[in-house]
Amino acid sequence: MAATAGDFAESMVKEKLGIKDMSNALPGHGGVMDRLDSVVWAMLTAYLGVVALGLA
Image 1: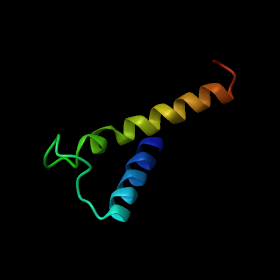
Image 2: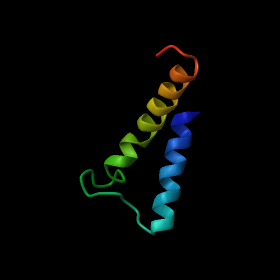
Image 3: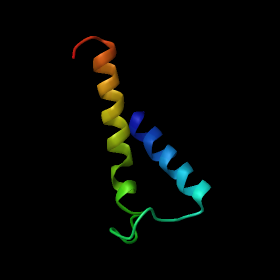
């Protein structure tokens, strides 16, 4: 669910900015952030979950 939320959030930012790709590093793929947005949000959610449970 966190990965999907990350992808959705990044798509909303791109829509508000009126751009299609975040960078030209990966043409046709939406840029580097389109490849990483899901992973970043999932890692953040996992970290916050571990901290909230007192495991870290």
